[in-house]
Each structure stands twice: as C-alpha cells, then as structure tokens.
Length: 391
Ligand SMILES: *Cc1c(COP(=O)(O)O)cnc(C)c1O
Image (cartoon, rainbow, N blue to C red; front, side, top):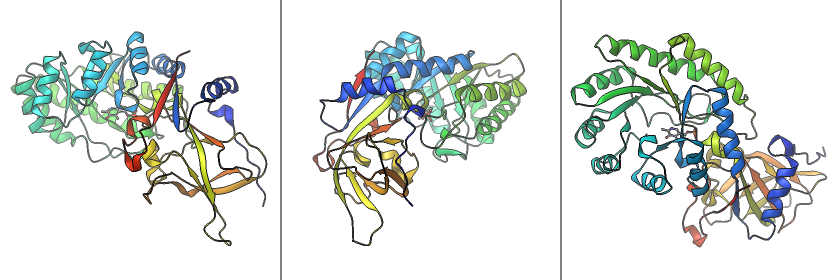
C-alpha cells in the first residue's frame, strides 16, 4: 500500500521558527546542531509556572553550551553539576557556588575537597564511603540522600546505578549527623523521559516515610529533590508540562500537606531537548539485495556524532524532510565503520521515496544529550558542532 510522507511539523516547531532555523543553517556544512536559546528559556518559564514553589537546578550534562548556561544564570536558575569540570565551567560563566549542587554520588575525595574550596556546600550521596569522604573534605555541608527507583515507565531509565534502598538511606541520614554534616533532604530520579507521572507518587511517599523516620531521632529534613525525568517532545507523545505540574503538586500535598519542604527539580532533557535541531545530510542510499524490501539510508550523523540515545532505539527522534509525496520505509544508519552505528532498524521510519543523496534531514528535539555525548575522533569524524540561535 502506498503511504504518503506526512509529518506534523508543527507538533515540534512552528513554521516560522523552522524557517528561521533553516535560513540560519543554509550555508553551513552538515552535520551540526542548532540550539534555539529562546526555547530553553521558554521551557524554564513553563516549568516554574506550573511548579512555582520549586527551585530549578538545571542538569548541566544535558546541554552544557555556554550560551545556555549564561542565559539560565541570568534567569536565576540553580545548577546540578556532576564533576569538577562542570563545576569550573559554570563558575567561569558566572554561576554563584551557593547555587550549585554536586549531584553525583560517585566522587573522588580530592574532587569533593576542590568543590568545597570553590564554595559548594550542597552534595548528593548514597553510600557510607562517600559520606565519610564528604565529612572529611566538605565538613558542615548540607547533604541529600538519593533513594533507589526502578526507572519503570522511562524511555531512558537510570535504574540500578544510583541511589540506595530506603533502609540504607535511613542509616546514612543518622550517621551524617554524627559525622558533622547537615542531613538536608532526600532525592530520587524516576528515570529520564519518564512518561508515567505516577512514578513520582511512589517516590514522594518513600521520602515522606524517611522524613518521619529520622524525625524520631530529632533530625528535621528540609528539602525534597524530585530529580529530572520531565519529558522532551519525541515521537511518542507525553502529557503536557501542566499535567506533570498539577499531578506532582497533588502527590506532594497528599504526603506533606500545605507546608511543603524546599522543593528542588533537576530537569535536563526537558529544558534543552526541544530546543535542538540536528541538521544532517544523506550520504548514501542503497539496497542490500534486489528483493530486499527496505532501503538503507546512511547519514552524515550517527551514534558517534550525537545520536547515541538511539541505542536500543530508546529515544525516537522526529525526522523531517522537506520533500513530499509517496513514502518509503527505510533503515537509518550513521557514517562510521562501526556496525553498531545504526540508528533505527526495528522502527521503520517513513521518508519521502524521492529522497536523494545530498538532501538534508532535520532531527528535531535534539537539544539534550547529543552534542555533549558525541565522540571526539572516531573514524576521524569531528565532534558534533553546535550553533546557537540567540534571538
Ligand atoms: C542526568 C540527571 C538529571 C537530568 O535528568 P533528565 O531526565 O534529563 O531531566 C537530573 N538529576 C541527576 C542527578 C542526573 O544525573
């Protein structure tokens, strides 16, 4: 059956904005990313509008571009950093150390000491050993404790690696006080691109239980960190931001009443994802045999050039061609000589049958976890370039 190549452009970007980006991209050599700074700002505002009592600690790793960080500093954002390199990066751009949270639970003692010397006083932890390193290298700091979640419902789960069971966390909170640290709060991450809002409900209840359990020992926790997981707009639809906001508010009030503790959010993907358009060019179109049903379409951007989140086809980016007419289902792959550099094989993307080598394809929603993930020199291909549209 003949399908027509239909793509709802305006589900991802306004026609006007896309024309602006296309014009901007016209003479530049592919592949590259265009970051629409106004979009990041808009997402920041939208999240604060729906959760006005929260503080946003932007997860820098999603998109550490200078312009993004600077703009967010101006807007009054806080930042979640994971390494001393991200620390130096945001400090150099003007972030105040009081606005930083060292959110990585995996830290060298000397890196803790370095962050402390730079003025960082808020740290995440999930183990006895890390807690000891904190007490020795960041004495008196506020510490929050990350509980384990299973990442169910998330397109890009972070389960298993981070966090500890609530019983373990309970003991850590008690020993933090004995070690001269300030037990400040509890955190979790429900998994990235979390489409099941109910996952926050369960995690918030566990936090409530911990608040109560340690209160019996005279420890008043002050902060609840709801992590990241807020979605970007990929092919599979999600609820709107306002639905996340109202549901999470309901869960919080159910468990904590009207007097909420300090609420922290750590959005990464949500903030930067929708702001990116990755512009790529078709290098080669081929068929493996005459009888083969599908064409292979090879692009100049692949898993090593920014699209690593196509691993297991977890993240399905919207892909747009300007051509119209009958559609052709194809297998999409990158340009490198690694056989894992295939983007989509199970999911058959429909592209225009008239697609030709040299045509451009636009990957929408590529503002998060693309440039920062791209390899440096694999097969000699340079890391993904990024341009920022400042207005
Ligand atoms: C990566 C990360 C985030 C951001 O997660 P998203 O799903 O991209 O919003 C938030 N907090 C921590 C601790 C992280 O490691």
